[in-house]
Image (cartoon, one colour):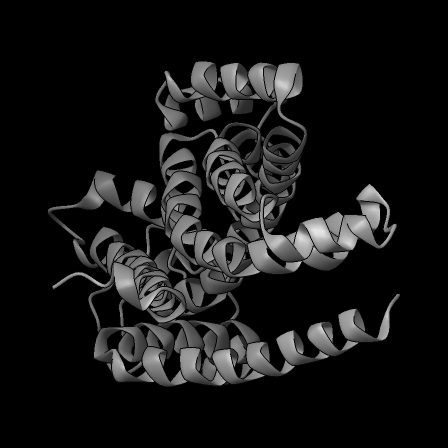
Length: 296
């Protein structure tokens, strides 16, 4: 590698460090983004320290105290089996984050990989991948996920597979579009001119520039993953009781919606604030990484 090219790369690294700091400053100026980050950090805190936040166990039943209204002893009341509802919701944050993170990682890996292949190599590879994307996107995601979950069976990891196998298309399209503009850049051509291999160019110059888009996509797709997993559990083909999943808690409460409305209502509130948190973070990151896209 020539000395001039080494200096250019070092200069680019310094610029990127400064750009990341400016990105963080722009993110902090967005109040909704900070609020969303606070919501998400709170959910993470609850998930980590759930055993310390409640004296009850999420699986302990008490038939004599079923469907009790909120009180000092049970702040959010009890469910149809006499279990402390707040405890199950707190522990449910673990399931929600676990499922959501696994989904976005799984579908992100597939989508980024296919988007990279389609955008970089083009030709018949691009044609096949994009036609597959068009086919999958022509069906409602939740319907396809239900069909796949129904075939594979119920359970946490089957939910991850079902949603991930149909949710990667958004990543693929976004990454493909980004790479189509990156691969024609001067620094990519300069890297090839110095004799670097295709794999090296992809790993050192293309993927780092796709990373901001991938981060934004993860935060934007996380709410979709949470809602989809909760929906599958609500419909009975996702995470199943006795695991404290927010979707299954809401489903169990619908049979007692007039007698014990707090069951479904509180589960829905937990889902709503978590989804809003990730949505606000995604919007903030999009505007921070690309200020020109900020809406008036």
